[in-house]
Image 1 (cartoon, rainbow, N blue to C red):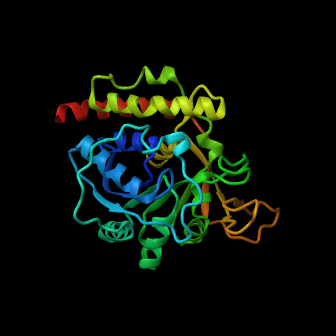
Image 2: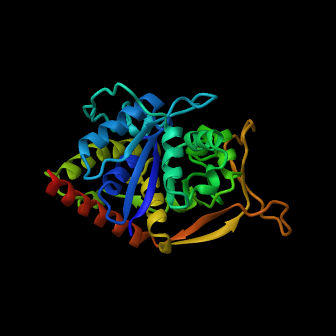
Image 3: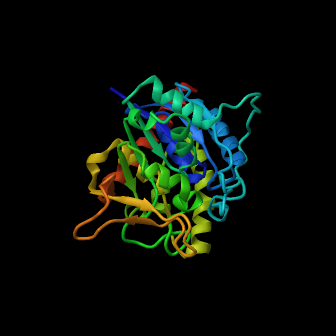
Length: 317
């Protein structure tokens, strides 16, 4: 039976890759997708999410929820990698909606409609999830599981020396979610950085004359240029896709139970993920963290999934 998932995204190039795969993936039923600010502002993220779903026109349309500004605003964004519109300057057309459903309400409705069955996959700052948990305080215990792209375990951050981007953007929300009484798996940079998507992998994407193949190339090539110019890398990290694969193919990842928390106010350590690794810890374990993956298999399944999605998209068209 297909796994019921809710995707929380801030599109974002690697978010868009996940949507291309997930919306046609026979292993999952995407019941809802919610947008939040992160790589771009909440308004641009909302537009991008709607535009991608409209463009892909999947056989089963998920419910869409739109997030608003975090309480403390967005301290940074990812346009230096993702482009001014978050999608490498593709400017997908998008029809204006007369009414937009709040992301936290969509999350609450989805979980309440299938208690214990929904896997929430968060690929963005945790603003929407924290607000949903505040709105419905019983909700965390009704979530089947949550898989979170964020944080670091043993490696340096990617937005500050101490912090990973998603956690840094809204550390207060992240702290609330970390402490919520639900099953959580953290997919940190330690794991997501181990896969580098190269120009050689682009050759193994769906053909350019397919809807998904053409779209992926249009958003990925600007990302390759940005990574080369900013980081000196001949390839890009696909953090969100690795996290999606961890949610669907957990057997490809090795996890350990940990006690985790988030620093919210440190001058140098805002957004740092902290784990009690003392010989006799005081904190109780509250999540699993991934520390190893079968990277070749994860990449292979990513490419296979995108090819299958492209075939399904063309068949529908």
